[in-house]
Length: 306
Ligand code: HEC
Image (cartoon, rainbow, N blue to C red; front, side, top):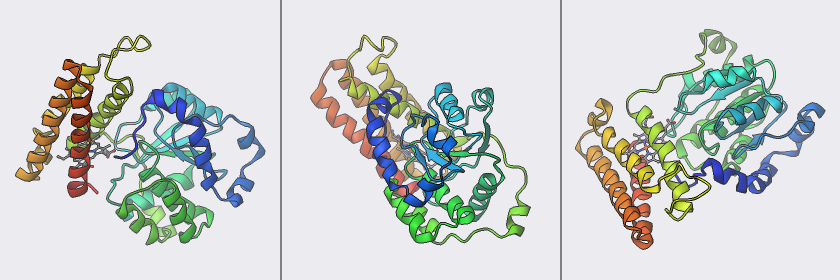
């Protein structure tokens, strides 16, 4: 929850993202084929090319990003994010999708085996993504590299750290990861190209998209911007408030009990205050409400998600 970049901010970040690639060890750089190194690198947040076969980073933000991936030579995409992949656009650029959503709290054995199977089965380079490319995607890529590219655990964990991963469960599971046996891999059935998110996870993927928009309007000083005439700052915050309100109605949210619902309500109330501050044009109050809202996400995740 610490780093969120809206699509528009990505462009400004490109320089930094490229520097971030220095975490790639020299060995795998040397392995990148002439073809891969001459093709344009896709301009996607947290983008990394781990090897000839495996790239990884943030989720494609639209058809342009998918096109850029195809141009860079990718043939397949593996999403470990909760959100539904845009299969149709991907197909238009000759990219096939596999979807294995994983949590921030760790990777189950079944998920890990499915990830390895997906990467192993890819004929041609595969792009692994989560949402921001910092935590779950790097963990999935680490497991695939250990199982399929002879990367040792210590290096994989170091790379996971360099990726910016902050989640204990992901480190734990990469650390303890043992490559699947041929038998385990053979037992994996057809992997889905898209898993429809349901209940709370579905709400969260929408909340997260809206949260990206709220951070974007914050960057614009919560003011209307001539370059983005379609964006109404208070309305963006209002839609987030709405989604947090709906979260409390989900059966799996209710099942977590009163404390969870109280945290949901605290988050919703913070969004409501932020909306009022934005409407009132009060940047000082908005700053405090934004912080309260942001803290309400992390507080709940710490207890119920990570
Ligand atoms: C009251 C608790 C609570 C609040 C408040 C909350 N979340 Fe979540 N969030 C969760 C839980 C629980 C999950 C795990 C859902 C699952 O995978 O079943 C989750 C999952 C997520 C995910 C991962 C979705 C995926 O790909 O699997 C994102 C992203 C996220 N939340 C963003 C946010 C943001 C941004 C906010 C604040 C604006 C927020 N959440 C507020 C409880 C909360």
